[in-house]
Length: 291
Image (tube, rainbow, N blue to C red; front, side, top):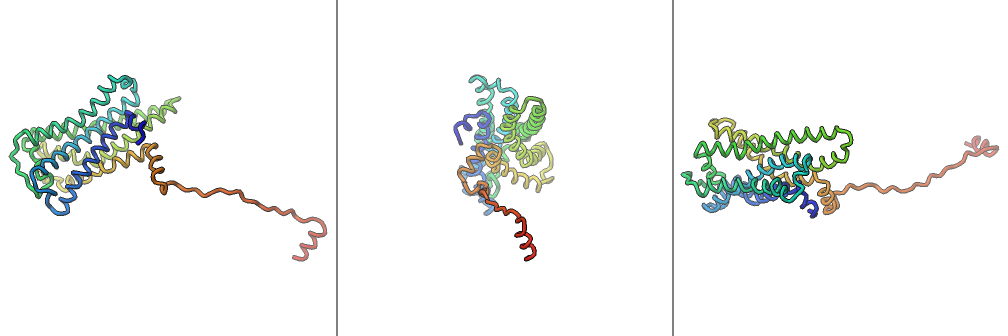
């Protein structure tokens, strides 16, 4: 990625999401693939189980927080750019929220898995060794995990994404906003594409999980919850591709790196057209009779 793209404020949260997604692919998805193929965890040790459940919880929740913050930050970058003009404002309204979104899940789950005593025994025949159940042992903690770590970010994504669409379309309809609309579109389309992906693939399993923590019997919608939890991984997998397709600069670089993807056009060459004049006089009459 070019330095200009890396330094753009609107791309920082996307870079963080792609980085978290890369960690998830190399760790959690690899362990899950092995588990679904064999029925046991990849490495049957307590250290591996601690690492697996911690990375899974922290990265998944951290990515959801980043998408939620990106939904809020786009309103600032598009409609209130003066709020991030100075270094102090950028620190408090740009860099600090990014750090908080990534650090809060780490603090919460580190406390639950490594500090708070847990009576759940590790089972090497379950996903995450069954140790994520430590969060739900205490009903109040489980409800807090579902509401604060999942429901609130999901509502933020939905509400602020819809609000962004309305504000951008309203700005487009105003007279004399052609140049600004082009800038709005460049910053809004990547986020809205990612938000739509998370709303469709992640929100259903989040709502059901919170309902379970609130007291809903876990025999209700079990199959649907299992399927949607599986499909939620595609949101993190497709995020880099959505970013690449929505950013014109990355599309151009992709075509440069892969020439076979370029659209080929046939060469246009000049063509000589010969024109014959109609014959006149006795010669033309003779030729007509001969035919």
